[in-house]
Image (cartoon, rainbow, N blue to C red; front, top):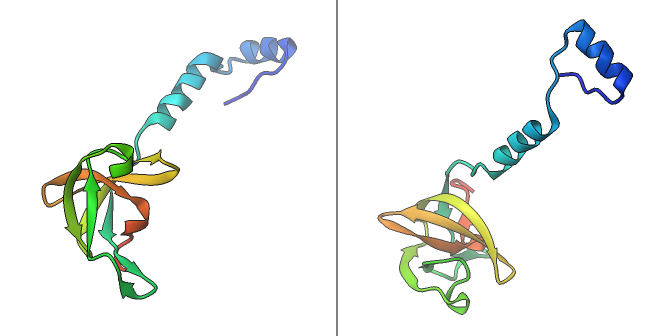
Length: 118
């Protein structure tokens, strides 16, 4: 792709037959690409802290933010359960992920997730 910055370059580009890309169309393509959600990722529920199991069951909420964010408890998921991680959002200054596992679909605090095998 050739970027044309001056009128003289535009005239040369058109006379040579180079394909030009219109500005707004390209910007819309980039915006649509950025809005495309990331593919689901396999993760594991992690209730460990410094080698000690501190949270054997992690709460899954109906929306990001947990109880203080006005959300309802959907379920509790056990430490070590494999889940699929989907979208992420920030709420109350913390990062939350939407997960699905064993018929449960809800939001969990990002600190309770880890990659399998880590």
